[in-house]
Length: 143
Image 1 (cartoon, rainbow, N blue to C red):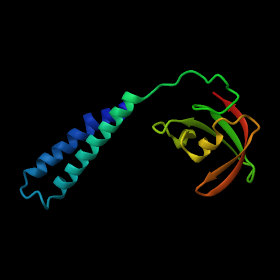
Image 2 (image 1 turned 60 degrees about the vertical axis):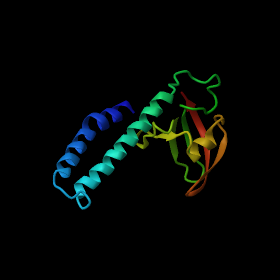
Image 3 (image 1 turned 45 degrees about the horizontal axis):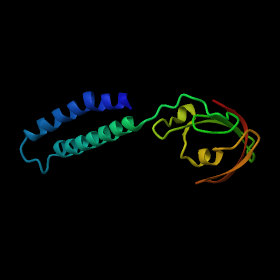
Image 4 (image 1 turned 90 degrees about the vertical axis):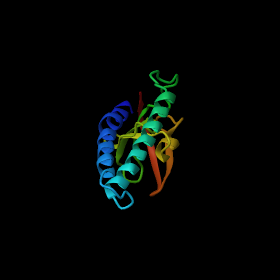
């Protein structure tokens, strides 16, 4: 989040500000696309920076494992076997700001994570997703 704030505030915002300044010198601002788009982009940048700043202020770093590591909780790596397709997937349950599909990090608020929370290895879980119900078996949990 800090890297995104740095990129927005130190790199992108000054560039957009320069474009808006140049566009404003061209006269009629009501029909000037660079000016209109630039002002809109500045509002988006400022809004995103405010949002990220508040998220950083309220963020909690969780480094300790839960007391009962045999169950699924926040930050767990969970391997599940799909009962229908017999495929295996591994997910890490993370906060909404940490989602990264390339690493299989899924939001704690996702249907899969909500269904897995509190369950233990060997439990069969029914997950209601937008694509329909999935039946999975928890085959591994680690932190």
